[in-house]
Image (cartoon, rainbow, N blue to C red; front, side, top):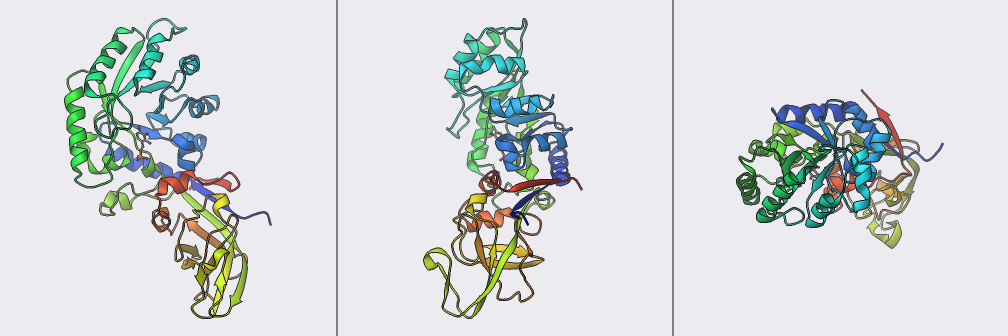
Length: 363
Ligand SMILES: *Cc1c(COP(=O)(O)O)cnc(C)c1O
């Protein structure tokens, strides 16, 4: 048997999540965000599974070129824009759209001499509406807009911004960002875009012309609370699973794993699973973090090591070597494992390593 650690990607579930996003978006166009290798799910497979998406969002040129070379012809937006002026010829040749969120990017764009005549570029100009990470201040935004229009190189200009706290209900920050974005961009005649997954669900006022869902496509609840019915319709896209390699009995008081971080309160049955932080399972998962064996839960016992974790099987006498163990996915929300590990689902999903074999199903 080869090493059994496997990420099972369910493309039908991703399509179903996309359909939900599409429905919630109303009249708005949908950009499926597939940066970071589609949050660890495989960008090309996800792009091919979503022919109805109006555009794809990636972080950088390399991610976009990979899609273009594989024949993805849909609009692709570089959400991180240009990092270096040498990228412009490729951006032009592959017909990629760019976010411009900083003065250096704007200058680099203005300095570039396109090979094609006419107005080859679609530019997404980003306003810093309060997150203070990227984007232009309102006055610099107005100047940048004018320079882009006057450049004669812009075929279409989309105005955008990004929320800092859309995952919280009734956030004063979200209200103030939305107000500023509207005030700065209303009436200028451009398409507008602001909503990520969370805002798509909680903030219909922010849908405008383009919504940009990412995490919800992968079946993760983008909100800090689980209250809306829409969220419960999301289906997990990735099931990370492996198998029990070893089962042993230990006496009360003995410890398991590096640093003796878990001690058996009574005689215990310990299972060893072929998954570890070398696969992307979080090293900071605490004792008690659940795994699924069949339809029963078992708890992590002791530190996560590079290639293995140990779980307490004392209540599962039928569990045996070779049994499948689900680390997250169908039957065990990745959000729960993330919470037990001091992180978020985004990090766990994007962190699955290439040592894990990826398998795609579409049903
Ligand atoms: C990543 C990203 C998104 C998607 O965010 P989710 O929280 O995953 O829905 C949307 N817009 C921009 C600009 C992004 O970088």
